Image (cartoon, rainbow, N blue to C red; front, side, top):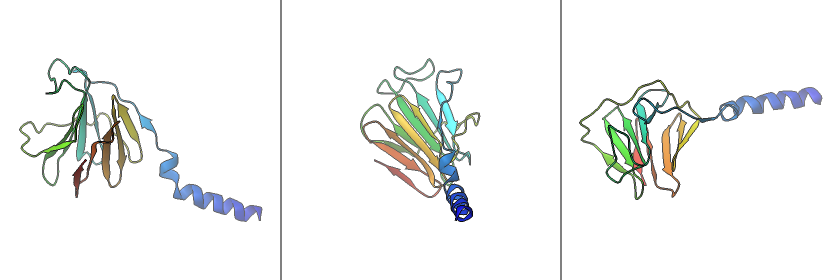
Length: 144
């Protein structure tokens, strides 16, 4: 019986291994004071701007702000401000997002200010503490 128990334990651990290694990531702000990270495919990149903004950028509502750019199949920016629902910005003029220095690996999460993001093989989901947020993947975009 003991050997059977060990086999079941191994099967269970192998099945949940990605969750077992999930972590909450912390990233240092870049030289501008923003935190930038990408998903493992580098198709989605996010920029967190703290409340009050930074020297080169102050969000319309004063911040904080989380903006994630999906590169393909069409370049789209999802923005979640300090309050209200997230929105989709399709006419992006500055398509230079993002450095891939910080990668939010599958199963990992990131928290900054009132925001929380989780990366998975299906895409990235980001929410603000009040529940508003968005989901982005190659195949689907959803704001709420």
